[in-house]
Length: 157
Image (cartoon, rainbow, N blue to C red; front, side, top):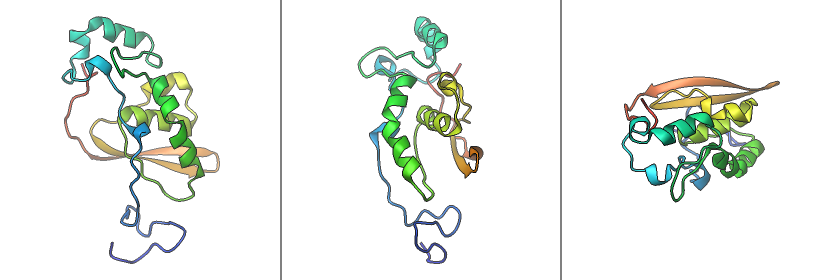
């Protein structure tokens, strides 16, 4: 970084200056595993596996993708517990880089969203930044679009 700002206490000097941060990769922040459907091209679930698409639509929270390693949103909720506890202890700004499904779980927790609604939390596609702002009555969410990479999701129509 270029000095300026930032003194002690782990505070960032300028908004967005993460030059003094230490990346900490965590397996719990990996994307949802689609099991045997992992290699399926984006947007093909509905047409290639209509029975899986229908089963998923019936229960977004508990539906587990078929095959070895296939996960559900409930699996992600369990996997993210340690991350949530670590974030709760933080008294400084934290940047979390994660997949959309994991972001939904974290946002759901910090905003008090009912667990059944976690899979439906709106997150814009592409690369964006979701900022949680701590207030007296909890957290509020601010969305910041960076740019859209145009990569289709497995679930896209």
